[in-house]
Every structure is written in C-alpha cells, then in structure tokens.
Image: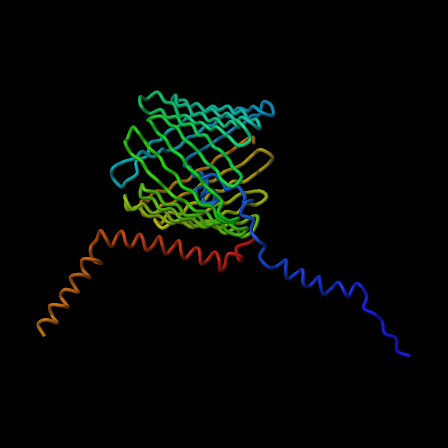
Length: 316
Length: 54
C-alpha cells in the first residue's frame, strides 16, 4: 500500500533559505545618516605615500632608542653622509656632513611630545594633545640659530560623525582651514583654503578619495597649480602596489611613479620607478627583537646621481 | 594648383609650430611618458596584480 510522506520541515526551509541568500547578495541599502568618519584631509594620499615615498637616505645611519619607562624614551641618532645643496645648475652639489641628534619622546594616550636637538643647534618639537574626545591640538616647531629661519604651526582638528575639519595657525601670518566629508560609505570629498600673510598669497584646493577593501583612488587639485592623482591596489595583507601622478602646470613639472610594498614577517621591501628614470628601493630587515638593518638605494641614470645607504636601528 | 600648394604649406607650418617646437615637445613628451606610466600601471595592477601575491 502506498503511503504519502508529508514534506519534512528541513526540506520546507531550504526553499526560503535559498531566497534569503539571493537577498543577501543584493546591494544593501545605504544609511546616509550613519556614514563612516573619513581620514584627515592631509592624509588623503596616505597609502600611496607609505609605498612610494619611503625614507631613502645616503650614507650611514645609526638609531638607538632606549625606553626608560612605558611612556618616556630617549633616542640617539648618528648620520654620516653627503647632503644635497640646492643649486641653480642641473648638476647636484653634495657636501659631506656628519651629525648627531638627541631625542626625547613622551607617549601617553592623550598627550604625545617629541623633541629632537642636533649638534648644529637645530631643534624640532612636536606636540599632539587630545583636548576632548573629538578635538585634538597638534603643534610643531623648527627652531634654528639663523635669523628668520624658525617656523611654528598649530592645528586644531575636530572629528565629527562623518566629517573632519581642521584649522591651522602658523608664524608669518599663515592661516589655513580644511574640511572633508563622507558622501557615501566609499567616497569622501574635501576642500582646503590657506592664506600666507607674509607672502601675500592665498590658495584653495579640492580633494576626493574613493576606497574599497581592494583599492584606494585619490585625486587632489589646488590653485597653486598642483594636480595629484594616486591609485593603490591592495593585493593581499602583505602586498600592495601603488601608482601616483603629480603635475604642476605653473612650473611645468610632471612626475609619475609606480611602486610596490611587500610587508613580510622578517622584512619590509619597498621599491619604485618613476617617469624621470629614477629607480629606488628600501629594505628594512628585522634581525632580532628590536634590531633592524636598513638598506637604501636610489639611482638616477639621467643625472648620473647614485645614492646608496645602510643603517642600523636598535630599540623599538 | 597654386592654392593647394599654399594650403599644404600652411599645414606644414602649423605642424612645425606645434610638434617641432623643442620646448613644447619636451613638455609634451614628459607629460605623455608620465600619463602613460600612470595609466599603464593602473591597468597592469587591476589585470595582473593577483600574480604578485605571496
């Protein structure tokens, strides 16, 4: 005798589950009142700069950082090598120099202080203080014994829910302001304006940044004649490729570069090539806990300028 | 016939001023090289970037 078996609850729920999967793959509705906070305006090219503008150097470099306690540390740096001097002709003029730099760092969750003093009397100081949860004060100063060569600047940064604004005050009657707003979860737009009273110059600029999990694309234009575009492709957690384009239509200067950034367990390798025929690379190898070996190379075939450097970093 | 020769001369003069001017051509070459490197690298990254993964 045939018996009809009713469908089990398991089979009955598979059809609605398939329907909910298709709903999950459909684009979710964007909540425009709950957009993420964008990154600061001055860091809009952050990923491209990290990959394409490593700290190349020429000569020998030794850095030693000693932590005295959890918040306070001292640093000693020795640098020996040629220093380039700006010259009118196309030839580069280098003068061999050697200097020692003493530094002190204070790092607290709400307050950070950095100071560096060199043997030629130059002092660099930086300050970052969280006045409230949303308001941050930053300051930096370079003081020298040469007259009219000292500079100082203060920034007030306010972080909103989906925007950031900054106000700048500097010596020489320098005033600046910038604002950046998240327009969609991936796109943020911003603008800046500055006034340099001492030189009687002002300028305005606009920037846009589009980022996803896999890529970041940014563009910036300014009335000073600068156009800057960058594109970073995040291949994986360890590898990223970057490209940037900089054009100044006032000075008729144009440069594009393409580079890579490999962050591995024991080392970090960055390299780039640019449209002026300059090839550069920087390798930071971690020998042991707190001991890093650095190799730097920059080769400009056109100007016949070859720069090689090596260094050691001890401490965090 | 004479008019055609004059028009060809005009075209040659225009070509010479735009493309054979050393200053403009230097800047244009630098611009083309930079734009080509930027655009070509973006195409390479998007198409073949996964091959560089470790």
